[in-house]
Length: 530
Image 1 (spheres, rainbow, N blue to C red):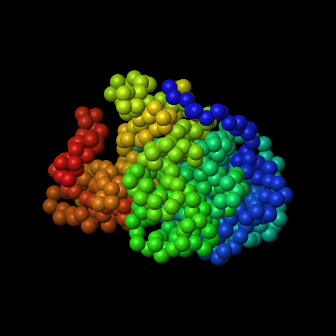
Image 2 (tube, one colour):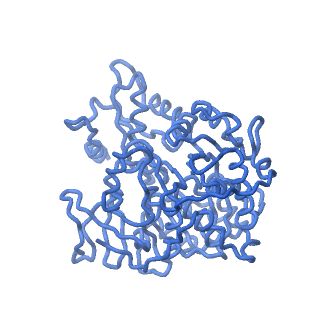
Image 3 (tube, rainbow, N blue to C red):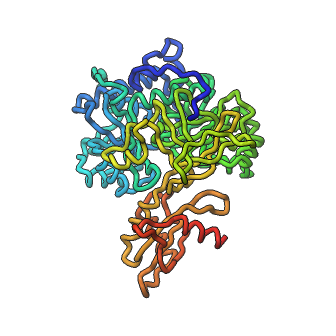
């Protein structure tokens, strides 16, 4: 077993709201917490705390309590922080929803999470309304932050100037958020993260990630994703940095905002690193204020990371995590310049890890002559590990063992310099531009097509070495089904990042005697064709 080289940090036994806002000093109250990139409007820490408290009061006046689940379907705008922390202040649970989801995908999450309220913005109202109606959520419980006829809006709720309710719960057991993750396989499941999980992970991150109150962070990675929620939103607020919010990624706008607002710290996913390393438009902007770029959500190769770092004159760093870990377990310490950027850095404090040989089940502890262990599945234990999957005891038992270790499904090695690298994965999950895609979800959709007899989906690499979903399809006899037909059908029914981007027709899907798809055979077939 490997243990963190960092001394344990104290994890306060408090709610997320109190952890972030209770200790604000007089000076910090007037600091800028949020900047809306589109308008330049600023929100101070004092105003954010007051707005979140008033929103909590408005919710409580409408019957929201510690047993309420509220869905939040919203891009990165300052109001996200107000309502997210207002919900937590009221003692309710937030389930964050991908802003790109279709009505059907939203409805599935609303129903599974048991959400009785939905908060959104007017550009997303069409799909939000359809999903809410299907899930049995009435119009008066669909809050449209920027206003829409027949719905409460944020301005009205804050104008009531309600006092936040007195709530009492155990931070170690009371759920704060229910993000959805596919885990190592299967369809998305609600990840039960407590107030203590989120507080712990911010405290752990503070040891490795050198974010300061003088930093301006460009927040383009979505807050609804656990990476954005913990590492952008909550960590930045705890460090009293300023967040510049962007609702969606556009390279020119991204670079414009860095230049305009003097951003110093960037959190990105690998596709942005590729753009920073290669796109000619980068040279047209003065982004010299950036001193650190931190990549997560998916693996970033060392060459691309180094090229981006050289071009920006900034420190490139990388971390590792998953929703089930709140999400960070590993990150590159700011003072360790000896660790290659191709690695995911060191364990955070208060954690232990194991590497398990996937063939024998034996624990790997020995470092070889080359200073590296054999590869093994990474298991992680610590205060950031989830309680389990919502209403999924079997899936929970498969992922979380009786000793408290989370089985990540990722294959890692340990280096004698006390850092880790992710080298492969056991799990079937596809990571497209940092977003999780469960093959089983796309396969179920494909099988609903009348001209598809059978189907399987795997991740393959495109020309830019980014993973994309590829479907292997057995077409019905004489159906004349085309690749374009398959891709269009999927695109109509899922969020853009889940679209099938390649299709191959085959005579039969390889399966085990128990009927399980043999994805390794499909991967071997793919390699043979390259």
